[in-house]
Image 1 (cartoon, rainbow, N blue to C red):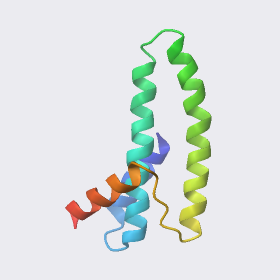
Image 2 (cartoon, rainbow, N blue to C red):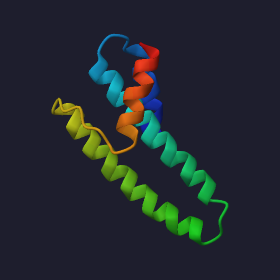
Image 3 (cartoon, rainbow, N blue to C red):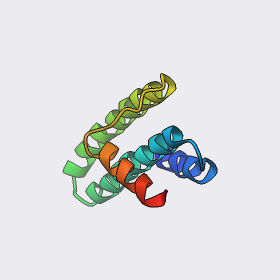
Image 4 (cartoon, one colour):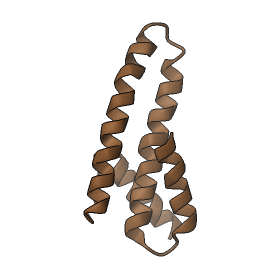
Length: 93
């Protein structure tokens, strides 16, 4: 959830740097989506717990990888979220 919140903050604060805006939008899409999936699967007994046990470490690893890529100056696109982030930024510009 924190990844989505910080992404929203950076989208609000940063108006000019498209590199930062791309990574912020991708963060909102990825971690917002994982948060919603986590809430939905909580309503499924037993399986929901198992899925959440998988989502938590995957989220952490993905968060670390994306931070490293952004720090290195790489505009790293995740398969679906990267394209969606680009499309959303085009709409806002």
